Image 1 (cartoon, one colour):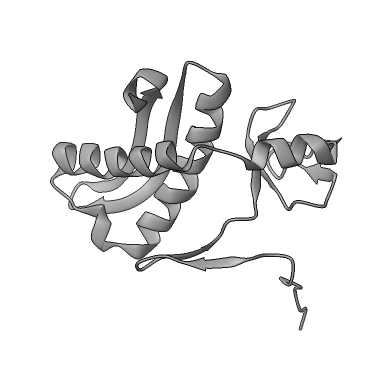
Image 2: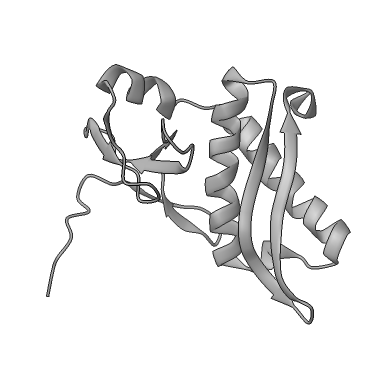
Length: 144
């Protein structure tokens, strides 16, 4: 049995969702897939295309900073937009909320440098017609 060392991760308990906040999200330089890096590690490998790369520790520290108010607002907007569109309240689903919060942080980080970006959370839940996804545009003007 293989054991994993998670001692470097800090766990934060929020209302009903427990998740790690020490992950940094990057885009692969070759295929633009999202990549998760653990701070302190300067190497990464894209699970999608297999590319390897190195990121400076200073850049990782800079990218860990994001506007928490924006991330919170984005997650609330995502839940509200989804509920308006499909009449399903995702705030009751802790697994869905964990994924929305994680993606909201990425969107908040991207909005620090870009005017607009897209939140994409595939297969967030299902209904009688099949799987449902979140694919929403957010801009800095949404944060005002």
